[in-house]
Length: 178
Ligand code: 5GP
Image (tube, rainbow, N blue to C red):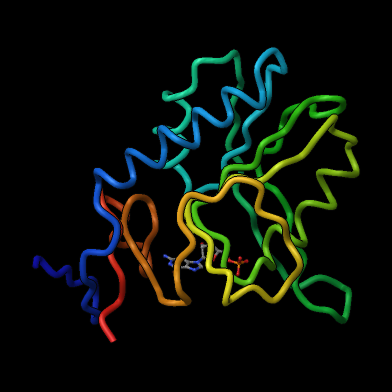
């Protein structure tokens, strides 16, 4: 077993390149079916989803568009704390079928706060695809419509996901040794 060291932490192989590829093809087939003739707009959330989004998008055969955004959180005026804003959201989504591409849904906080901003623009539909989902970590109500893998509440890296900026450039996913 080849372990991976990133900064001060050790990671072990968790989801293989092969298993990811199969899952991506499976997700693409479901999306091909559900979005046929709907010309959906995929919105990939940077940075983590960039590899997943690229692989998924090239596995699709339907007409579709893709755009990339970054979510930035800052301390707002509200006492509730952080406010999430989208950087680079330069597309018109009114009356369009929108599909969010996320690398991982953990507590659900990020999307839970961001989705109302998208709904405000009245898309025809709004669905979420997450490669990874940690159902045990969910704190904020969020329906993930298409999930690649449900995983336990343990930290993972690779295939676009980082640990303090590093570890994104692996073809498989690794899990923190505990
Ligand atoms: P949420 O708002 O759902 O709690 O968190 C979502 C974001 O937290 C993800 O987009 C990702 O950036 C980060 N995150 C959550 N869990 C993990 C994990 O296990 N590994 C990595 N690398 N990032 C994670």
